[in-house]
Length: 115
Image (cartoon, rainbow, N blue to C red; front, side):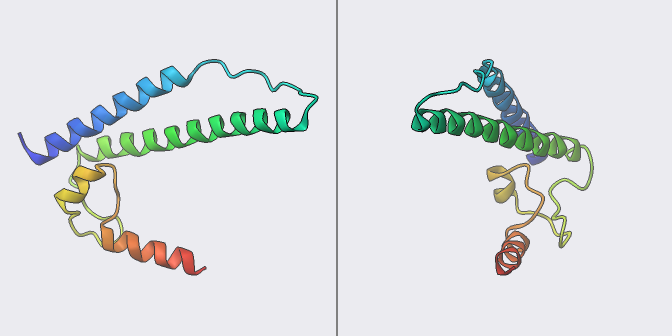
């Protein structure tokens, strides 16, 4: 089995896992209740906001996985979007949906934190 096939299988496994998690998390959200106690109200609002953030992150992760699965069908998969060099297989096994090599990602993060 080639490395690319193994990475594609891992991406498919991650997608299936996230979709399963998503289905379990689709319990209808309780309506925003109104509590007399401000602490109870704040706690309820926090839980609702946290649930939305988790779903938003899941959607973003699914989009990255879908994009990577599409890229595995092209020569672009496994190439850094910034420097165009091959991303090491070890990095792809850890994060198969990555678009950047470690050095480019580190440079981008340093630049982001300086501003």
